[in-house]
Each structure stands twice: as C-alpha cells, then as structure tokens.
Length: 169
Length: 419
Image (cartoon, rainbow over all chains, first blue to last red; front, side, top):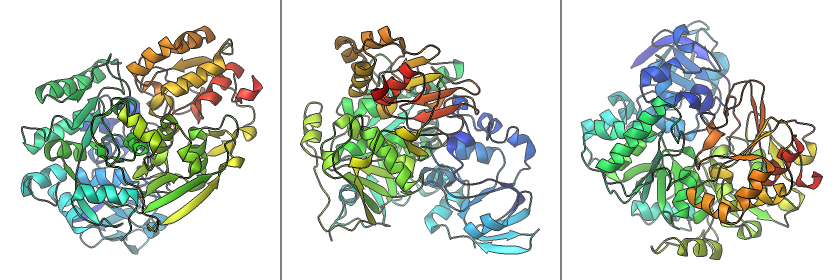
C-alpha cells in the first residue's frame, strides 16, 4: 500500500498530553477527539491538514499515557501514517491496534521538511521525499503487525482470523 | 538459562520454560484493568469483536477514578458506559465511588494483585504493581478490550536494566526522590521497552508505599514494567490482604541484565522535576526561588496513607502561605477513613488544605484543581508535561509529599528544614 501526502513535522518527545490533552478525554467518539488533536501545540490542526497527510517526528513519539485516544485522534484527523525516529512503547502498540501505520526512520526525520510531499510504501518501508529527491528506508514492521494494519486494526484482524488464532490474542 | 524475575513471570504465564528478551509470547492475564477514561473505548472494542462474555468476571477490575465524581455530562456518560457493562457482565471488581479510589492504590490495598501475577491495565501507570513482585504493564483500550474477551495478550519479552541502590538516605529523602533522581539519570526514553528492576539494600529498607511510588514512575523512563523482588515486607503486606498463595520468584544470580546501574544514595538530596518533563530534575538546593500558586498532594504516585501522614507531620500547627491553594486527595476511601482516625485530615484542614474526594484529582488537568494561565504548581504526581494540569502556559513541578507540604507553608519550593 502506497500512502501519499504533505508532511506535518514535529520534534522529539511529543507526549500524549500534547496529542490530546486530558480535558478532551471525556468523550470516546473519534471525530470529536480529532477536533482537539494537538489542541495546545497546533491549535486548529484538523483544519490545516488534508486527508492523507503524513506526520514526521523525532524520538519517542507518543510518550506518556496509555490513552488510545491519541492515535485515534491523529488517525481521525486524516493522518495516513507517522514516520518517527522512534515511538514510545504503548503508543506503538496502540497505533497498530487501531490500524494507524507507523514507521521508524531517523534519516527520514532528519531530512524531511515541513510541507514536503512524501510517499510511503508500507510493504517495502520505502519513504520518498519528492521535494528533496531522496529515498529512505524504514525498519520493517513485523509481519503479524502488518497483517493487523492491513486488516484495519486489531478488531478487524480478530474478526477475520477468529478469536482462537493464537497470534491475535 | 538463568532468568530475571520479569522473564520468569512472563515464562510462567506463557506456559514456557524460558522467556528470553525479544521473544514474542502469548500470555494469560491474571488481572485486566481499566478506568472511566479507557474502559468505554475498551468496551466498544469488546462489543465490536462480537463476543458476548468476558473471559472471567473475577479477573477484571473497572475503576472509576479519573473524572469522578463526574465533572460534566460527557464524563458522566463515560462512567455510565463502564457501570452498565460492569453490572451486565457481573464484573467482580467494579467499585463505585464511596468504596473506591485511584485504581493503582486500591488494587494492592484490596489484595487484588500479589507476587507473581501478570496484570495488564489500560492505564500507563499499571506498572505500579511491580512493587509487589508482579509483572504489570499499561496498554491501550483495544488491547484491553481483546483481553476482556480472551484473557490473553501478546508481549515482547523486555530486556532488563537493573538499578542497584546502596548507601544511607539523607534526611527527607524518599522513594519519590530516588525515582526522580533515577529519571534524571536515565532520561525519559532511557528505558524504552525495558524492564526496570529496582534493587539493593536501600530498596529493601523502603515501605510498600515508597516502593509503589518508584515502580509507578518506571513508565516515565519509557519502561514496560518496573519490578522489585518480593521480600518479607511485600509478603507481610500481601498476607494481610489476600488469601491467594503468591508465586514468589527472584532473579537468578547470573541472569543477563542489559546493564546494571549502581546508585549511591548518600549524595542524593530531595529532588524536584522542573517543567515540562519528569526527567528535568534538580536537587532541591539548586531550585532557586520558585513561587507557587497551588500545591497538590495525592495521586497514584503519592496519595497513600504514609504520604498524607508525612505531609500532616510537616503541616502540623502551621498554616499554608497566603495565596497558596493546598489540595490534598487521599488515594482511596480506606486511606481517607484512616487519615480521619489518625487525625491527619484535621491537621491538614487546620493548616488550610482543601480535601478532595478519592480520585486522580488535578493530576491530569481535567478536574478538581485545574491551573489557569501562568499559574505554577508543585505536585506529588508523576507527570509535568505542557498543559498536564491545566492551561498550556501553566507550570508543574514534581516532588515528594514532604517537600510539597513544606513548600505550601513557604509559598515557594523549599525544604522541610526551612520551616
């Protein structure tokens, strides 16, 4: 699957309180959550992105709380994929579980600029920045996690595979 | 092969002899936990899966603690989703406010976690239970929803970093100071994906309350779990609260740690984390003149009886400085009751504290003590990110209950020695 979009760039240690501040966690609806995505850091984020845009960030993206509302808000805001130097543990797991693909590449983070047009091939891990004419390769996603993303998240994956499949539970 | 305590517990729950770092294993969960923020999403997932029964109504805990008593219509709706699910599925460990408190305070208090258990919670501070010699870690709501249906989850076995604390503690230095100091040493992703094993003679000398404070903040270094080998103190604590037999295990002497960090505590003074990161830590003597608007004592980090007792000891016969709002929130209904019996609450009230209902309180900036623009708080909680306790231009400093109590009297961040 090839994803294409304009880059929204962030730095290191973007924590889940920045992605969606706790005062907006009184709802579970993903569209409501998306409205307040990056409410403090980039107010009006949702109105500044086009569907399919890509987040590129530094180290430890998604650090902090376990709130799944964070990747949900990002996904529902229209972001198609996150490329970061590294991810915090719980966020990494949550992103796959809700079907938001994420890739790790330090080189991509260091070179890609805000606003660049980038395409990401999830099957090969190839990240191409068309504006600077460079290609980067992300660490491959483990196969069974790719299957989860391809299915659209853990719930869809389980529905497809059945609850007895050892790999999914 | 020799194993660490974390690897042993994981192997046991995966039904395998060996669990080596990097192994992907499928484990049975002894206790699955969610709160009023994370449970509604997990319940949605549970329903979407299409199953009709939880895997075991006696192995699920649903605790309303984040936005309770409910702060608005939306949070009341969230709590209602959890309450109705708990009733429908006869969840044994659903506690309504009035019998409840903060999830990570009441699960140990009610004996629901014992050594050797594997606990998965939809809350990042689920790592707290490692103080009991259990494996515990936080996940998101989808994972938790699947666990409620199946009782299982997959985990990658983490490598372990051992932290070895030796020496004699200086006056006013507590578990909170040790963990803040450690976070400064490790950095906020210094233990990403790792197990943090807290050990050494200093840890063996700490009360359970202080051990919980330390494992609670393991996640602040990115750790998957924090853990302390069970000893007499652990077993005495558990024996008073649970009739189950603990699975007591320890790390083999020649187990393979990724690294061992030796920390000489004799040089560690009380610590303060500056905005906006829990690893942005300075010794108290180097804090300078930081005036405050609010002091909060409570949370899953420092809302236990011992914490309130120490705060009351400092505040006894003194009053909070003019212009300072001191909020104290007992971590559970039981702690609240004990604190009343011991006269702690009266002491705190006399000093000018306001007492909140057992809950997470203002820790995550949603309820019961939110900060305005440019306001500054000293808090005994675990996080001080931008906007964590309210306005994005407010500031949160983290410290122990004794430093918090002294600072409330001084009106600025300071030491109990100064009052």
